[in-house]
Amino acid sequence: MKANGKRFTLLVAFLLCAVLAAAQGGRAKAECGDEEPSTAEPAAPTASSRPSGRLFVELSPQSSRADIWIWNEKRRFVQGMELAAGEHRLAAWVKGYDIAEAVFTIEPGKDAAVDLRLMRPPRSPDGSPPTRAYDLGHGARLEMLYIPEGRYVIHDYYVSALLPPVERPITLQGFFMGRFEVTRAQFSAFVKETGYKTDAETRGYSTVMDFSRNVWRRSEGASWRRPGFPQTDRDPVACVSENDAEAFLSWLRAKTGKPFRLPRRIEWEYADKGESPDQFFFGYTPSTGRGYGNIPDASYEAARGRSIREWDDGYVYTAPAGTFKPNPFGLYDTFGNVSEYCAENPTDRIDPTGGRPRSRLIWCMGWSYGHAAIDAASNPAESRSDRGFRVLCPNV
Image (cartoon, rainbow, N blue to C red; front, side, top):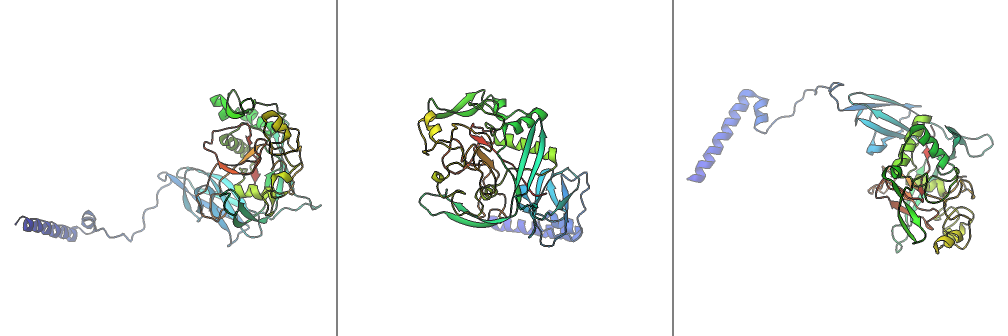
C-alpha cells in the first residue's frame, strides 16, 4: 500500500507540472527541467559589461592561406573572437613570407584591432646575412642576425640513452636572432633606465659554484652585479632568472616597438646548427668543438679538479662575447659560455608531437656544462651563475 501511495503522489506531481507547463508556456517547462532552446538571437553584451574584448586582425598583404594563432592561449585565430583582458601574442604563417608576430593588449569591454604586416625574407646586396642593430643607450648596442627559413629535424637525444633519437621534421620560417648572448652592458642599460631589481637582488642571494667544495650553493649577495667571478661589460649577464629575462624583453619591446621574445626550443636548435643531423653544428660530439666556445676544459679542471675536455680555452667562468669562433649562421657562443633560457613550444604548429608543452626550458651548454640537454627550470625566479639568455625578433 505504501508503494502504491508513493506512485500515486509522483503521478499527481507529474500531471500538475504538465498543467502548469501548458498554462504558462516555456517558463513552466524550464521550471520542470524540460526547457526548449530559444530561437531568438541573444542580446549582445555591452562594451561596459564584457569582461573580455574582441580581436580583429588586418593582414597585409591579405592572404586566404594565412594560418594565424593566439600563441599564449594555444588557439587558432577567428575574426572577432573574444579574448580575456590582458597581454596576448599573435603569430601568422603564410608560405613565402617570414613569420609575422605582434604583442597586443585586450582591455576589459573594448575591442582590439591589430595590423600584421607580412615580410619577405630580407636580402643583402653583397649576399651576406642581413643584420639589424638597436641602440639601447648608455653605450650599449644590440646586434641581430637573420636566420633564413629552413627545414629542421628535431633529434631528441635526451629521451633515453637506451633508445635511438626521436626524429621530428619541421619547417621554420626566417627570424632575427641575437648575434651574442645578452651582455652585462645591455642588461645594465635596462636596469639604469627602469631601476629594475632582479629576483636575486630582491631575495638577497643566487646560486653559484663553490669550487672549494665542488658544489652549487646559495651565495648571499650574489646577483648579476656579483656573480662570484670577475666579468667585463662584454661578458654575458649571469645570475638572472627567467622573470628577469622577461622583464628585459618587455623593456626592449617598449623601447624598439618590435616583438622581441625568448627563442623557442626548436628555433634555438635550428639557429645553432641549421639542418645538420648531428648533435652539434661541428659534429656529433663536443670533443670536435675546440675553438667554438667556452666549456669545462683544462682551465675548469684546474679550478674544480674535473674536466671533460683536454684543451684549454683560457676561461674558467664566462668569456667576453665574440671570443670564440661563430657557428655557420654567424652566431656566437651557442656552444659554451652561459646556458640560455628558451620559451616553450606552445602549439603543434611548432611542435608536431602534440605532447604536453614544457615551459622555462634551458639549453645547457655553458662554462659549467659539457653536454647539451633540455631541463625544465623548477622556478621562474631561480637564478644561477651559469645561466643567461639570448633574444629573438621576428622579421617585422
